[in-house]
Length: 342
Image (cartoon, rainbow, N blue to C red; front, top):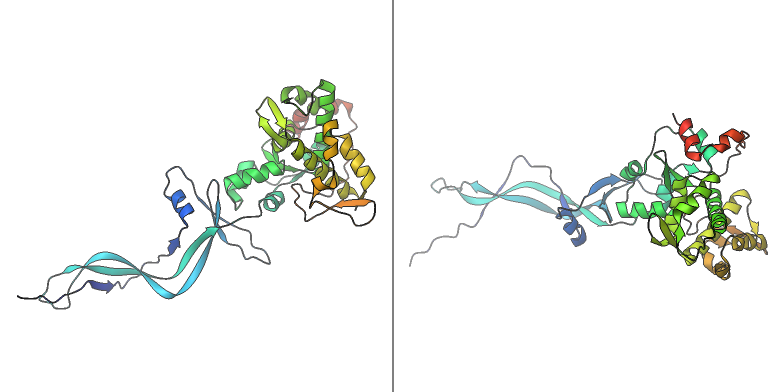
């Protein structure tokens, strides 16, 4: 029986190598990349002294860090080709050609960005309407335009936006200061008392809106606070979470007081805190509700812990002249703000 020598698979290295890189995807990202309904964005983090910055790949719900990993083994990228045999008497045969040589791989791993600090740093601080009217903004920053530059997923961004009670006013995005947030909460409790509403029950948003506006509080800020605290409801009614409300109001009050003085008296703090809570919630106003958010530098005093789990920014409140025109105060806040925008 005759035998034929096994010629093997013809292999050739192309003279002109292509510039290619291998991208290694985890299973969770591979499913996103191959889905027609998913969207992916490449963004970069800002360089710092500790971190030179890196590329991140963001989806609607997840963020991944992209990093280059070098290997001691070279990887060839090959493709089928038609290659001539060394023996001129033989015909061309099917073979493989190396079109690129990869000495490094792009690795994509899950990444958890510091969403709150990043968004807080990107937003101007809203102290009150008067200072916002006088503030000169170089370029209008909307919620969407800031997201485009934030190295995080849309879901992570929206959660940080809610946690900060961030809002848009005349298309400009703002981060409210602790002092204005405390004012908003006091206005809400006052409006509930005036309208005969209970914070323990579903709140009529339309009934509260008129009183809130009279306190020179933008309605978008009011809705942002309710969105932060609610556990159910819709555009017209909202049910707030007592546990979340007690902890949040205590944190905001403590931050507001610490922004003015280095510390506050414990007795005064608890008095002011409980005064703005429904009777049924007052027993929850304890230090346990502020776990990780406070320090007690001395007996009888308390201060906000700057590196604690804060969701607010503590700005240095500038000294602003108070309004003296009664005619200006008679107009609605949105009319006054709009007239001052250029």
